[in-house]
Length: 328
Picture 1 (cartoon, rainbow, N blue to C red):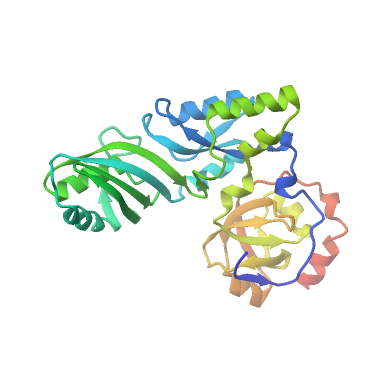
Picture 2: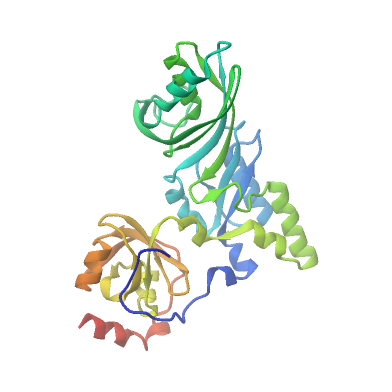
């Protein structure tokens, strides 16, 4: 944890550390980093995961075309509420672009492609799931990995909702020769990357078999990421145990309930965590971290999504007095 602002150190007693959850708990509250294969749609992949694990619901983050492969995070059970935040996360792709002319100077290709870094205008393809109107997206990084005559292998890190097929077409138009996307693989979706326990649906099925038939949970744990992984890149606020009951029922977070926090700005979406590192809720910061640490009163976060199961009011009755003292 970096840039931590500590108001009052404390030790959490309520809840469970994310990696100490049982497999059965994870099966109702986790994310699977699926390696999508060519052929099925993203919705079909989510359905496969749901049927394999026998869970009530599953949802994916960021739709991939049927022939596109790679990182497809699928949230299961209560974790599906986090999907809306993953949808907005940056995405990284590895692409093969096919040029429509031979022997183009490599320097020319590099120069034109470098011009697409930054804000770009895109008109979604005719066959797309969104309304076809001009929109702005940002290319954060665009790196050429290899050029083999007409084929250009490149890596692109971009804003969510960027169409790589359209990017290839626009690059070809800029070069006055034409180009098309030949092959595409997603290597990152927000906090989930290829190296982060990426598994196929077959891997998941085998892992569940070993767990159910042999009692070996090693492989299944490898497949199931605790929900907290999905908010890895969010700025975090750690709250006292005494604040958990009200937060778990959807109430907003008051500044007196905060133990420590990372540095964030007014209006930023933040993850509220227990002192054991559990994700409690996600919401919008109503004050900056600096303002909270200075004033120590008022509403700090407007809760938008609650992830922690509701806690009975009697659980933290003893600690409620400490919050009242801090408020005074």
